Image 1: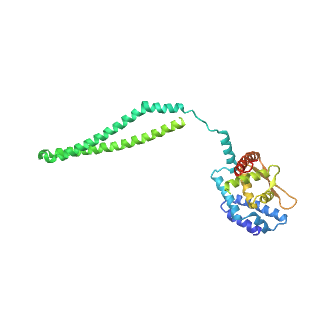
Image 2: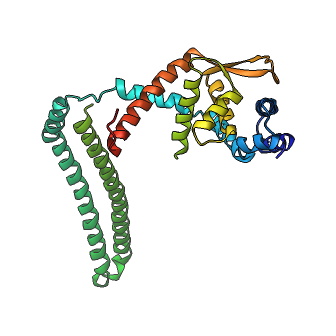
Image 3: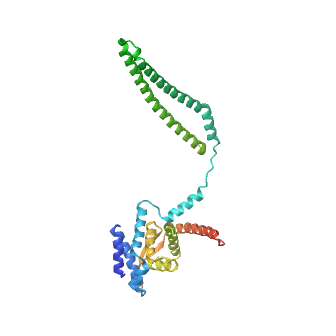
Length: 197
Length: 105
């Protein structure tokens, strides 16, 4: 490859960079050729030593991307990592306080709160099921009712049925909420227990 | 070789070569490619990155033979980084030598 061919190829590969940047880069390579020629090398020899313009351009492009994305230069990040490791020995926290708090708080308060909440929800479920059974019983009793009272009984049965469904739906969401709250609480407990506040 | 690793090592080499005297691109490329198996063209992206990161500054100087040359000069930050990288490199190679069975010195 001659000097001009090499520079042209480089320019083409660097296409997406800004014009100033491309011309700065190319002038570095032009200087390289000029120095090489002044030392008696041929353009072809110099091109060969420089290496494939495509891969040279790729290095510029990837450096450019790293910079654009806020990636710090390897040199600096390496130093930063070393510093961070050297100046930040692992801090061993005293966890006795948080752990004692978690255990006592759970035994004295949260166990009872959880029992009352879950038994309340359970009783609502029981109520819903009870009312559903009552609705079924009322509707099942229709054939035994004198014809004059049938309408009232049917309406009562249907009313009870919808009441049961309504309480059931309510219970469903309450249960879900309680489960989510419990999970979050357990997570928080674990965190405090293992890492402190 | 891992690209990031190679880059770090080449940064270290270039910074070291500039420690005692300012040099121009061709010189740096020639020395480096003579000792390590890389093509001359690899040096220029490194120099450009070091300049962008403030590790080196450049200036043009006329020469008796051939065109004016762009010289690279280590900055204070470059010198500091060189010290840090060098220390890291020495620790690293010492450990590797120990692992592969050298005497680690």
